[in-house]
Figure 1 (spheres, rainbow, N blue to C red):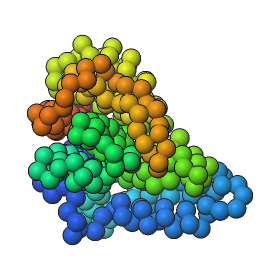
Figure 2: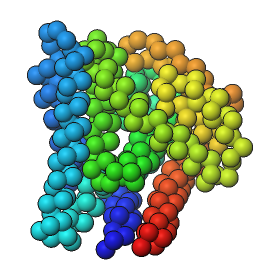
Figure 3: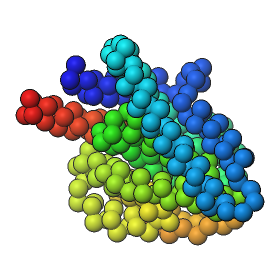
Length: 314
């Protein structure tokens, strides 16, 4: 099974497409979250918070990589088939496309059927911004921005590190991403302690975010938007999130960005795009297609490349 890496990624993606993130299933990210929380409580106090935060990040990321690597390596000796099954399950845990798209539809549906307050509440499940005063357009905008941004974080980036470093690489990336989502904030509590986690996440996502934006334009046959993406994407406060957001803004011919409240504080963010048209469910359907098509194209490109390299080298 020398081309097992192809089977692993295809099966893992198929499982994510079918199952998403069922609540009844124990999840790897929950374990990551508990580890991060315990470390943060123990270390985020006193002096040298930055150093303590950096030590926590390094230990957890190295642990995620090494434990996965040695576990799969040991299983491969005992039972190769079992090692492939575990590899598929671990990679499945690293992907989140079905859940991402499902949550997007849930926000739009809740807003339409149950009104503004319910839509704000549902949106708060998937975004970090304050949703209490958002209008309908702002709720739809935030949903689509999140879908674009998390196509990179939740699908393309873990696949990218899987392609380079195997399952251990994908698992280590998810640890980096989870660390950033838990302690990478600029709040008083995490500003110093979580700074290294935030910077490491920026570095880890630098290439995947740009690949994501490119794939989004490819699957919609809109490569003419590359200039727009690189011009508008760099306006974002994040060095990475702006690129997939700009790609979707170009595809939908709409405007993203603008000021938002985080933890009660107004954060001024530049606009991405110029067309302030009203967003609709049709735009969500387009975003859903873009996510699925971009993910499948990336896996297909990897599979074809891996197969021909395998044939050439053997």
